[in-house]
Length: 198
Image 1 (cartoon, helix red, strand yellow):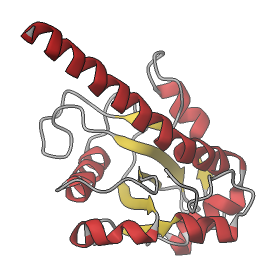
Image 2: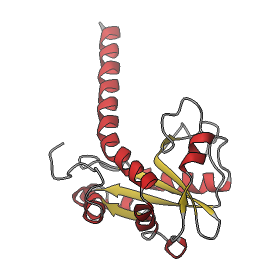
Image 3: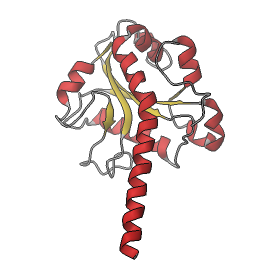
Image 4: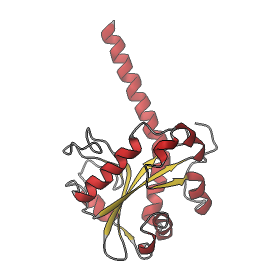
């Protein structure tokens, strides 16, 4: 009986994880697609960061990223992690939802680490701090399946009302962009309506 119960818990847990991944993908996939296809969107994103002055003429290295990743990877942008590093940012295969490596007008290569939160989601304790640790770790020593880069920044993508759940966590990200702000600038981005339920 206990064995069946644990098996059921495992199945339910897997189903919940898949359901979460599906919700997150509804936001991350069109976001990454727009980064790839719209220089104006990449410019707008970079202007929200400390790299604003070098944003004009910047180039997303998505083809190079795809070529560097393992054959099992389905996208250039999603689920970047490493199992070899044991720092607090990487340990256990902690991942970056959307990673974009960009060549600035200066020729320097930087990484944008995006944490994607759908409207019903919230930050877990320490998640933001781990993002920054991981970003700094990879900038100093990029994993083998990643393009080397010299600097990085972390960006939270989410819906403003959820800030009440973890206000202190938000400040640990270098930048915060709401879905509402993004879709106001780029209404055809393909991002789901954040006002729609669940």
